[in-house]
Image 1 (cartoon, rainbow, N blue to C red):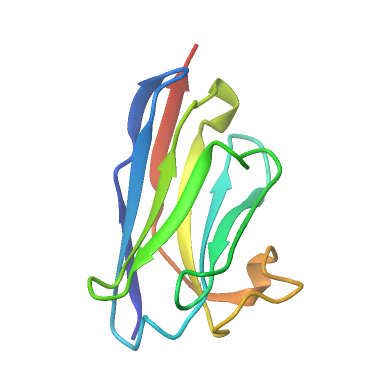
Image 2: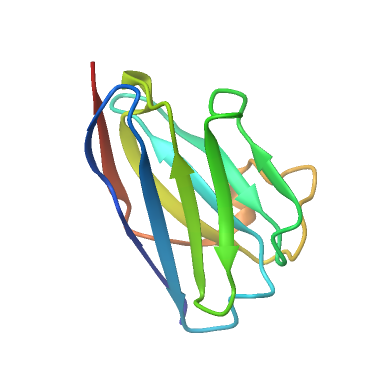
Length: 127
């Protein structure tokens, strides 16, 4: 049984920063691609960032590239999303997810690639 628990969300002003964390328990964490997705009110869930098993390969949605950084600490079974220069349009529930793959493939941005999901953490950016 895999469990993913996100934390670190909250209310922040535009231009501010937040760091989200996702702690994984259960089956092996260090072998898998981890991703962050988000769902804004009234919108579909969308890919935000992904990282391969050893942290050497990362990928970002164009809307967050240069502002967000994904990282992981396999000794702590934790993946992070450092968010900077936040904008009101970043307001969403953020979810971490675990893929069965170990490295990023062409479909790393597809939610269907990820078998396990956390419950989400709310991020609200005020203007």
